[in-house]
Length: 190
Image 1 (cartoon, rainbow, N blue to C red):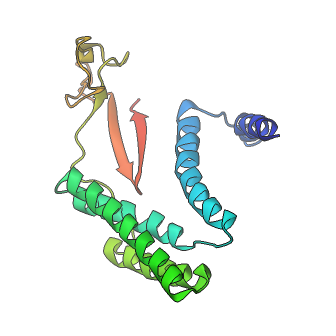
Image 2: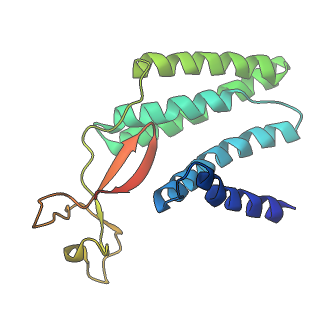
């Protein structure tokens, strides 16, 4: 049954845009799959708590706040931002679990309260706006067909090069990495 649902969703991804006179592009598919992976992790966390008879609203607050922390602190140091976000997520989960276990209360009011607090912190830190990295280096794939000069030696283990691929004719960069709203999307300029 899960494979039938997956086939239906894949067909809908390509059929539904036809009703609006559009086509599904590679970017649409990439963006949808990227969202599915993020929401899948949230669904997994909530699903595991539901299996044991509880419900965790706090996951949603952590899902909103931790990327905000990672982007804000990642401006200065990428590892600091990532470490702070992961530490905050672990700390929130530990505190919620400790309160539920020690006080023997149902998880819903505890996690709902933390969700509201974390969402408020997210709004305060981000000034009610999406945030993005302002100092994103231009990254290109090392073996990009649109960037012939970006090919690397086979011994290189890194997949990305920090050198930008600039078209000699137009002077435009052929690819860039855009990070906004805690999501990364690979965009090619045309």
